[in-house]
Length: 346
Image (cartoon, rainbow, N blue to C red; front, top):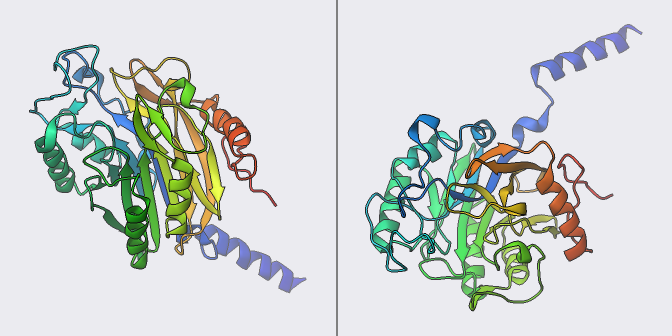
C-alpha cells in the first residue's frame, strides 16, 4: 500500500513539474492563408492609424507557435509604378503595402512568408527586391523568386520552407520535375519541409476541388492534387495552399497533411469578403522532431470591418472544410470535429 502511495506521489510530481511530458519535444506550427494589410493604390484603403493594426485581435494566436507561416499577397514598398492598370483605378486590383507594415508582421509573430503569388509583381522587380530586403532586416524568412527557399531552426530541428506559384517571378508549380528536385534537395538537410503554393481558380465557384488542371481567366493555375502529392513523394511534410480566397478540402496523403486552401486571413479594404469569402483559419499543427504529424486543429476566423480578422466561435471554416473534404476526397479527406479538431481514424 505504501509503495502504491509512493508511486502515485512520484507520478503526480513528474506531471506537475513537466517531467515525462513529451509535449515539450513537439514543434508547433501555425499557418494562415492570404495576408494583405492595406493597399496604397488606390488611396483610401489603409486602416486609420488610431484604430491600430488589423492583426490586433488575432495576434496572440499567431505568436503562440514555434513557427508561424503565411502568404503575403503583394509587396512592402513605399514607391512603385504598376503597369497592370491605372494606379488609382477601383476596377483593377494591385497590392502594395506601406513598408512599415513589415514591423506589424514581425510583431505578430510571423517567421516565414510566401512571396510566390499573382500579386508579388504588381509593382515590378524593384518592389519585390525591396520586400525581400525588409523581411531580411526583420529576420522573417521568405520564398518566392525562382530558386529561393528559407531555413529556420527550432532547437536542433531544421525546418525548410519553399513557396510555389503558377505565374511568373516565382518558383513554378507547373514545372513538377524542377519542383520535385528542389523539395528533395531541401529534405536532405532539413528535418521538416513545408511547401506553400498559391494556386487554383478563384471565388465561390472554386470551393470544390477539381481533379486535373485548373484555369482561371484563361491562365493555367496547375493541377494542385498532382502537385501536392508529388511534393510529398519528394520529401515534403506539410503542404499549405491558398489562392482561391475560399475554403477547400484538406487531405491526409501518406500521413502528411495537405490544406488545399486556407482562404483569406487578413485582407483589408480591397478584397471581396462577401458570403464564405470572409471566413479563414489558423491551421494549428504539432509535429514531432522527426517530422511526424502529432495533432491538428483549425481555428476558424472571420473578417469584419473591411478585413479585420477575429476568432469565429461558430467554427464556420472548419465546418466547411469537413464537408468539402468528404465530398471532394471521399477516400483521403480529413474530417474535423464541430470545434475544429482533426478526427483521427482508427
